[in-house]
Image 1: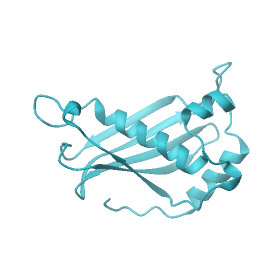
Image 2: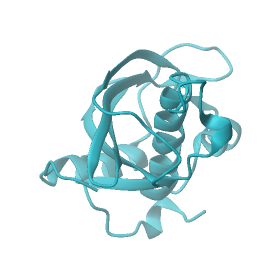
Image 3: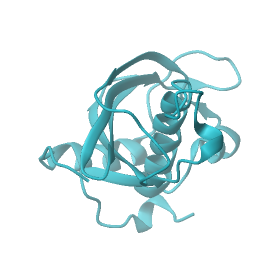
Length: 154
């Protein structure tokens, strides 16, 4: 993992690829519904590592900051199958005083399959009380928010 002071130039939208397998499917031969929020959260975790230089594990263990989810919404628009790679686009929608909101949009073969919003709060892992995000992360996230987010297909 890189250090936040060595942050790469970031795009406002991060793309994470997921290989959907037969084991991810239900008897209807499409992705089991419960896998979709899992993939969205996996994509947000990858966004954290790409954008901030640390994933949720490092954030919790090394910096004593948790980010439990307090709200999730998902809208489905097409089935997900093992035929194509699932490309999840993650964007930072809002950095609040003590929370962060992401959108995740999943595409297969240039077709949008789902779109969701996910809100988590920053907490101190020792007391499990809400806290503000640290200044180094705020700086990174504010830079991402200032860039325009273009809707598009993966």
